[in-house]
Length: 300
Image 1 (cartoon, rainbow, N blue to C red):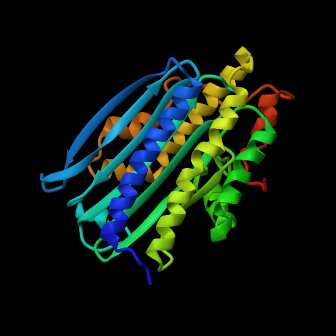
Image 2: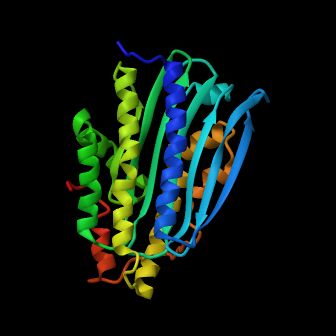
Image 3: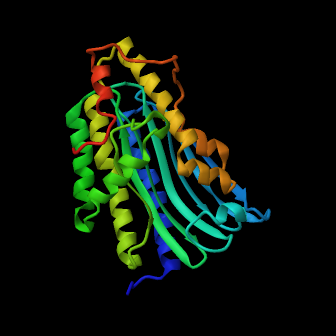
């Protein structure tokens, strides 16, 4: 039996995501010394018009990190009963806290990265969810292997890497484009509760604490790599695929909008620059055409 109550776990996890938000910001400032940061606290009303919590949207814009959102929120209260019926719990009152981040670097040799870690309570049920996934634009295979190795090690004590990787590969796919993934995956899990609250809380915080190690060494290694106009053109077209996924398939976007979240904070995930060209294809026999082969599930 767990030694911690659900209410205690909520407090611990809320503090954890707030601290992680600050640690990630420090890492970004370390790599991008001139980065500008906008702190934008917000509050929401629930479905009945009552106070329903809020959050802190933190927008970053710099030379290395062109656009990034590292956001935390804690919401509570009533939500639309029709949407509530689609969730895992019972009733129309929901409590949720978490951190959600998206980083769009300027240099095409640095991948875009997304991560989130959350705890949701609805009626008699509660569950954890989250993960991290990488969207590269250049075939630096050692970076892909490194990213997955960090998550394999982090999941090791819980024996969850294989299952979380499989879910991630399937979820972060533009299914309207066949089996084309938006990136090269990572880990993802949702509706997670093993029956041991203390263990699941520890696992989710341990995974959250590994995000910095999984991504920023890659950014550090690639931040000064020269790039070409063709590199950037491919990056902008692949950002278009990112937009497609977030607006068509992403559950987090839907959850935020359906629970009366703050629209600007939700859509901060969209890249600042993007390109669409009819029937776009990269030039054959280039790093960009090679990269297309990696937007499919594979063992790393």
